[in-house]
Image 1 (cartoon, rainbow, N blue to C red):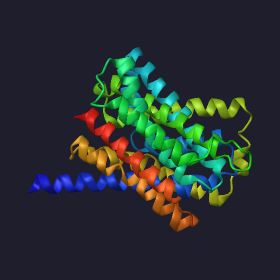
Image 2 (cartoon, rainbow, N blue to C red):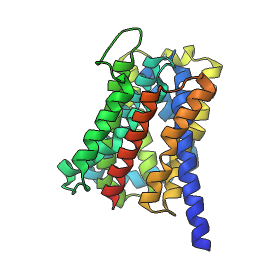
Image 3 (cartoon, one colour):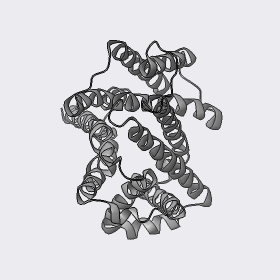
Image 4 (cartoon, helix red, strand yellow):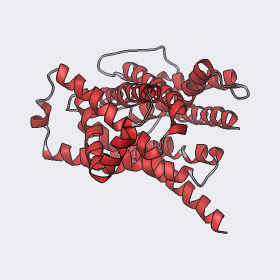
Length: 304
């Protein structure tokens, strides 16, 4: 009975974390669209880093110093792809659509497992799951229909959905790459060390980008309302959701976690309707359902 309660707790925490990510992508991060993209990503990592440094920074710096050069290199790659390129791409995509196609952008990000499994096959030599090629083609086709429906690709300046979709897919590739690199080092580190190191390295990389582009002046341009959104993201949908997610993973199996993670795209659709009054078209709803089913099959077959 106790183990069953733990499983319910774990599933609930993963669902909550995924729902928080959906809320972030639809409601919170898009509200920062008036700010510079690199500056937004920098602050989104800097604020949680400051909080973690106050709570346990001293011990984690000691742990980081004990890491091998190889582990540090892979942590750098995780920060570069997952923390920097991935976050820059998805934030840019959300800003481009200007509240018009937020659900499409968040759903396309769910292609991440496809890239993660493909890269793991190339870089780590892992075997791919059953019918991987078939489900991947189906996922890509549904992603196309979700974006353009039955039209040819278009990249009109006023719409931006085509360009935003490219950024969303680039984010999925970057996050998938980060997952593969993480497999190289997570066996040697605690989750807390991995989380702290990722935020530390990402803050350094994005901070250098902000300085190089002369965007430090955005600190003075940021309004009190925008700072409030930054803090909310940092405490909830940022590091807070990640922490809930990994705590939940301790108590449930991988295939159950895969189902729970579907709360992310489902909540995105719900939040987009509640806060922005937007619904997917019938074709997009059908495409979204096919996309989520194919991603579920790909992930489940791989984990099995």
